[in-house]
Length: 352
Image 1 (cartoon, rainbow, N blue to C red):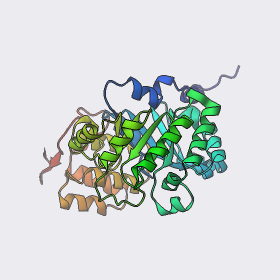
Image 2 (cartoon, one colour; image 1 turned 90 degrees about the horizontal axis):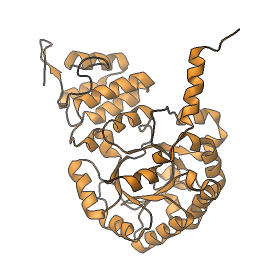
Image 3 (cartoon, one colour; image 1 turned 45 degrees about the horizontal axis):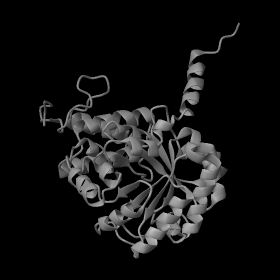
Image 4 (cartoon, rainbow, N blue to C red; image 1 turned 120 degrees about the horizontal axis):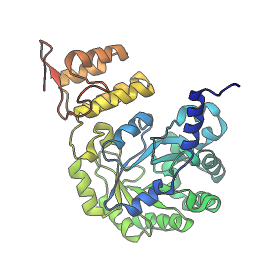
């Protein structure tokens, strides 16, 4: 009698487990049941991929978003589906962020992906011109009726079995934003994330925390504050001013994935863990290099940072780290535990 190989049984079981999403993992359940404001890693094009999502979860991140995925391509192109979304049984709770401008594509994508994520995020905040021209992202901030209809069709089909959020920006007139929020919450949105800048406000201008606070006061659903959470002090300040149900960080976590564990700079153990995860999952070299460049921006000297950025391939990058630093691998004693940089002196002896 032929017997199915054990590895095939494992694959089948893994796929089955991926589609079992307990309601307790839904973002809205986590927000409601948390005894503290939730911490969230926001969506980053190219960078909030599976290895990074797994990394930040180790450092007290409660909810993690995927990069924005365009529904139009996802529902029509198998190659796009394979390249844009990867996951595993440890990748939870995860919210997939969707870029979309119509109810048909949104519902088709939700049909395809909802069994493999814990929440759906409709992007109404991306200010990139190419997306705005397509009626995606921040372009939707002028179309509350369309956004409400998109939320409504998902809720009419799936009800509470699918958690849906809208990530928005603010208008110059806060009353317009309030009207937008009231319409989408009436449509059934579970929670709202507010980036405290308008579509045209540069990131160099401070986020408008007062507007986020006002939205939090009038909303009936939980509100997450987004913008300028770059260190522990700013995290605490955002919560103090807005009284929101949680804080989302994007650039801050890209530079310091250990931020929500209370560290103001990336820990050396965090660098080791990222190396291990990126090698295991096979991220492209330039993505790995960019992550490490951001993560070490505050802990490397200018010379060290320059040398990192001058590496041309993975071999050169590993040689640089192993020559000048102690970079532990998974399984080695003390892996992922060091806080300070572990430098080698000219004789190759490790110090800090």
